[in-house]
Length: 433
Figure 1 (spheres, helix red, strand yellow):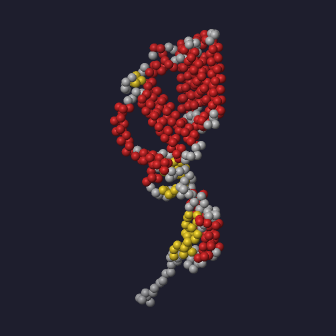
Figure 2 (cartoon, rainbow, N blue to C red):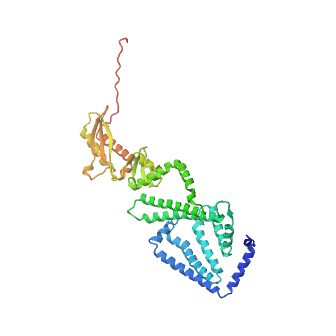
Figure 3 (cartoon, rainbow, N blue to C red):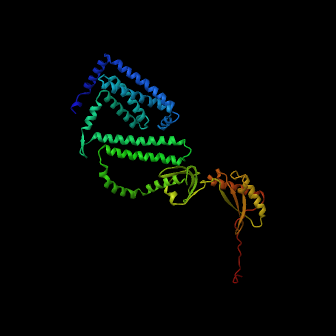
């Protein structure tokens, strides 16, 4: 702390004095040349990366918060490349004993710009955004004044009463590594998804599973590396984590079962995005997304429902579009006794022909009319009709369309739809006069 006790004005005065001496020395042109060469190399390298943007680097830019490559190139890539070359030259000249303060200023500012545009400016929360900006520029000022290393040494000297030689700096490094790896997990998963999006051999559900597995592996690696960084022996925690895992396992049984069920669904390919399903509870809808824990179903009323994956393994599921989207429906119709059966068949076939959902052009799947029952008040027929692919996903609208057209055709041919009738017979009692 002795070295940190000087006032900020003293450090600033020494810094200004060094800058003045370097400005009038012969080495100033060497620093200017190093900065110019770094800028030139940065732009040339960025141009080469842009030439390859149609494949790998373009996908990286698209994965970066959904941005375009030109935007990422201009705001992130070019300053990062220039600062990389400049800091390389700075290290080389400093090892040779040459003054490099002007190069350090430019390099530190470029790094601050990259960090600000990468981490702080995309944040929507003003508190987080301005907090990160303040931290970035404060650290940059310390680097320029050559106080950053002294601050790090002071923080490292504060030992905590936990473990062996555990300092505040160890905690900060562990947190930084964990945060960086968690962010990298999200970024890599987006990159994997972008790269796999153009692969026609993999279903969208498989692509989603791969990206989420990458994220889980990266987060697990972040936790392990963070614990190793702060000096915690993982073998010493084996017994404790085992007992804790048993206790947590009872509370996370459903989550684990849904996770396993999701993997089974994706690998078996019995369910995929775009399928129209009917669940045991009466839920019908189209599969929008399959995650490792739940599946998103959108009903025909545009209601999004998250269904746990275990529901698809342990209960009955009807997949109307698993192999063939065409299906057959039976529309029940009752007509009065005494109606001409041939005329009823003609009316129902005309009704089927007038509905847009009827599959046409297939002799093996042409509409048909069945007499299926002799009811109490009616002859019970069924219009048996095959539907087009699009009709399979709209069962309510399809049934309503056939009922509408059937009633129209029956009325056109004078065929009556009966309703229950009851005859009441009154018997006079013998005691009644």
